[in-house]
Amino acid sequence: MSLTEEAVQAALSKVDDPEIGRPLTELGMIRNVKIKGTEVTVGVDLTTPACPLRQKIGDDVVAAVKGVGATAVEIDWGVKQLGRQVEEGDPCPGVKNIVLVVSGKGGVGKSTVAANVAVALADSGATVGLLDADMYGPSIPTMFGVSGPVVGDGNGHIQPLERHGIKLMSIGFLLESDKAAVIWRGPMLQGALMQFLKDVHWGTLDYLIVDLPPGTGDVALTLTQNVRASGAVLVTTPQGVALADVYKAASMLQTVKVPILGVVENESYFICDGCDKRHELFGSGGGQLIADFSSAPLLGQIPVDPAVRESGDSGTPVMRSAPDSSVGKAIKSIAERIADRVSVASARPLPEPSPDGPGSKNRHLPIAR
Image (cartoon, rainbow, N blue to C red; front, top):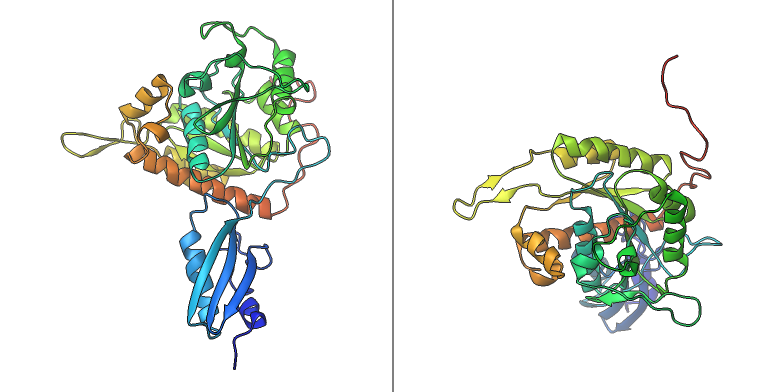
């Protein structure tokens, strides 16, 4: 009995995406089944170019097709990037996925994580933008070694700067010097943020990484109330004094119904050059505590390495200067897991966003009277 396309498609309909848990055929990941005798070529479109489960998907497809009589199976890989639900009035409709990088606290390496995850995603073949939303303390210009001026395109749009294959925008590009301060009240911050979303010519992006400022105030709320984010990544260091604020950031995201994709524990440990022993300088287990509180996975742990500081200060992210280092490998794995989690979130209906969000009404401090 000859092998038929119907038999192959039926076999593939029983192969699930290992993360999303739905059949590849239902997700539109299968295309162009070609049969020549008992040799089969199957087009498989991954949900992200940074897919960490490509090998397993390939193995499952091959096993399923051989199970109906094929003697050889070749996979023609492609990418069909899943994206968020873009609604009417969305300020950046060409952006398929918006990922917020959040800590609630300064000094835990949030901008370092955002910058290097952006580079890792771009290296996977994705089109990536990075928005520095930390108006009072912009770090992206220094980390990428980029300065203004920013120019318009003549059509009312601002052209983002580019470095390492990533489109960049930061308030730091608009300041007279890297030592100038932004002295604005909340409404001006919110207006600038919306301009960065609406008026910057982001074009078509697979991912826009947004480096949010510390805290849970105006910028975070403006963003979550005006943009349907794909999800957020929480960044922490292991010690308790950092966790206190990250818990608050997680609570804010849960309140405004932004999916928490996972937790990154930065500065998790240090490997001594002389003894090769692992030293947990800031304690241990903090990232897992945040993950448990958030009902989200711990995406990875990034070790302490002087190369991270040196690379950030020199304007070349460590994913460019030392991609094969222990830090580079950790960040690459984290970026792949983020991409995977974004695909899962995009394949499921998102919760309705909070129409007003916390802080939309005047509230009194809870002081007993």
